[in-house]
Image (cartoon, rainbow, N blue to C red; front, top):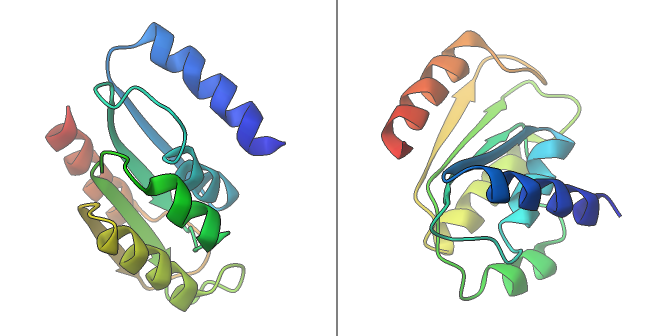
Length: 130
């Protein structure tokens, strides 16, 4: 499945680099949220980026995050997104916060996209975690 393939790829990155931030857009962001449930080197994982993500497979996420070291994250979502519901994105953010993850939610006027304001805030986020 896609999570398994993504996990294999991420493990190759963990073998190559001392510090890693996982991230994605849309489906990639939802896979990223579930990659946080995998057995990853918690000392190398510095954060996650969730662009246009929503809460998916909540029960699996609940079980998988139990006992994992929280990492900082940044999440963004357009208020006019017609692909993925804005309120479902807020549910993911609230879920992450309830599980002790420190994060920032960037809400913007727009649809299923990554505007420049989000990229600027992501740059600041990356400067903080590295």
